[in-house]
Image (tube, rainbow, N blue to C red; front, side, top):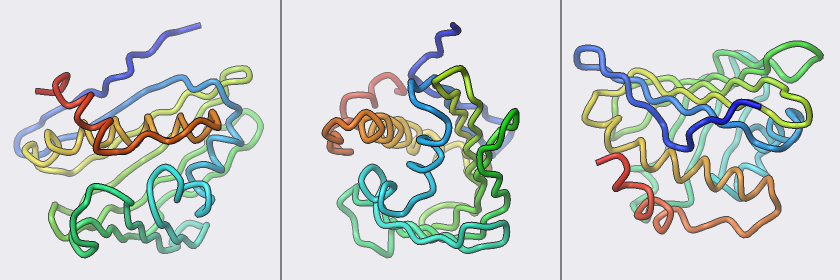
Length: 170
């Protein structure tokens, strides 16, 4: 079994950056897919989400944290790839990330079954290097919240988890 680091990576190319995380989560691919795409499940680890579950559908997300005005943290976009789990196939959710405070960008979740577990690869591309450096500890915190939700454990406060992981990205 391959071990993956908990921390994400930041690749900077000119004035643009891509954040990436790869984690092995000990839950079946269908459970991870549901946590990413079911609005009720997603609400517990990320925040209010509405989506049209299909390629070309719309997605709108309002994270529960950080504690800033809704118009600052609201994200919208189109779903670019919608490929639910199927035998022998990578599941993919990819969508635009349009948020007032950052550049237009793209978020991609890839899920690969690994026995009874799932390899989750998360990428967020198209951000400026400056914004990506600010986003990476927050993304780490959200992925930790996702794992807690999957485990049926209390979901940690985003701000607390952010403060705990941010020094690793300084």
